Image (cartoon, rainbow, N blue to C red):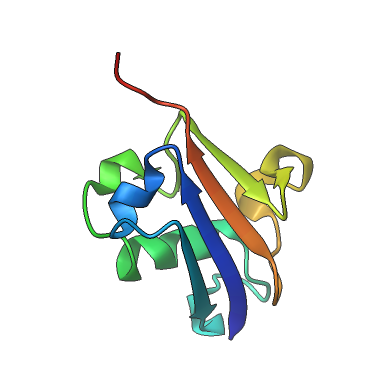
Amino acid sequence: MVNIKLEFSGGMELLFDNQRSIDVDIPMTAAIGSDMTVRDAMIWMREHLLRERPEMFMKDDTIRPGVLVLVNDADWELSGLEESVIEDGDTLTFISTLHGG
């Protein structure tokens, strides 16, 4: 199991039952390889936590354009995007930049 904290803002929380923060234990069986990656966690989230409009969260097996992803408060582009390895105690933050007008 990998215990991580998930945070949502900018409207992303609406897709996850209006929860801004969730502590989860993701089983290692969800990992495609030997390490748990952000992609593995997102796929697990889509299957187990997402309550509505999956197209607003992911497109295929990656994050939807317009959603910022932070790994421990740093842009995931600095750590390898979807292939960023996550470990116990890490925090993944998802922030929507898409807003109506």
